[in-house]
Length: 268
Ligand SMILES: [Zn+2]
Image (cartoon, rainbow, N blue to C red; front, side, top):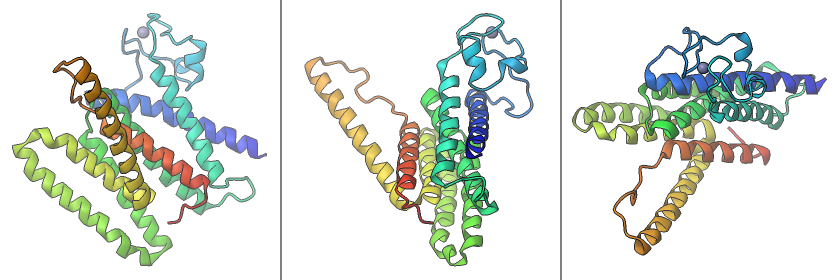
């Protein structure tokens, strides 16, 4: 029976994946993500039911739009597949079985899904545009607070541990409001700070610190390689490229999260 449960969870995962691709495409263009009908970005033809089945539409249409035959970016397929796999893996690591399914497990799973949604949408937009949108940041704050309320309900003593994050959110909100009026170019940095706070709430401070260290190390190695290349072949261009730090943090954090869950050290 359990494989039916996992197939069902996979199906939900790829459906969420399909929504993420839509959000990543529409949010930077400030389009409605809930109501407007899906359409092909190239020919703008409205998509029908059979064009919108996650994963399978891409396979059966051969990665092309049914109407204008334009290539659909593999990104859609990759995000849907990875989301399906993440949902299944998370359920597996949380020990989901038909006989032991409980409401508290489902709530915990749902909250982790909200966090995963934040990371995928934030990272996806960052990779494409090197931006972290306000609406995405606010979503992160809302789910961060929601998660803290949940932790408070299951363990009222945790309030002292999580008070610090509420203060951090508030301080960052005030600081961003003050400085962004003067220096709008700092917007990206504030997006990263908000992301780190939300990350620390959901994946604990040690995983977050590990994530930051790993990303800094990757940036350091990357810059070192660039420096060596530049010494050999001096060009002013691309020496200090604009890096998608949110994207790097997101991928690293989800990897560490799964690793730690797999080693049963995930303690709230
Ligand atoms: Zn088309």
